[in-house]
Image 1 (tube, rainbow, N blue to C red):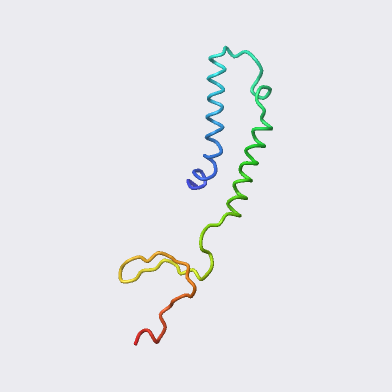
Image 2 (image 1 turned 30 degrees about the horizontal axis):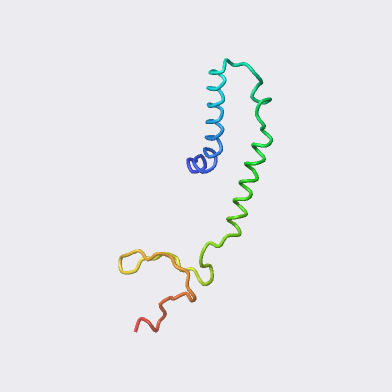
Length: 101
């Protein structure tokens, strides 16, 4: 549950909370006169631009090169008491019966 909160909910709620706090403090300082929050701010353009930025970021990540992807993945494993990180290689090198002789 905490992972969902940290990865999805808080990044969406924190900017909105900061904006609403700023708006509340600016209203108190200005005397509370003028238009309401819904009338004064361009919510459609704010949400649309946020959505377009998110979609653009996802497209960029999908199309960008992320490194070497050809070959067979060898998962991390333990050799001689130490952890060997995972690698991507041409062939999966597994010890066969010939290597034990």
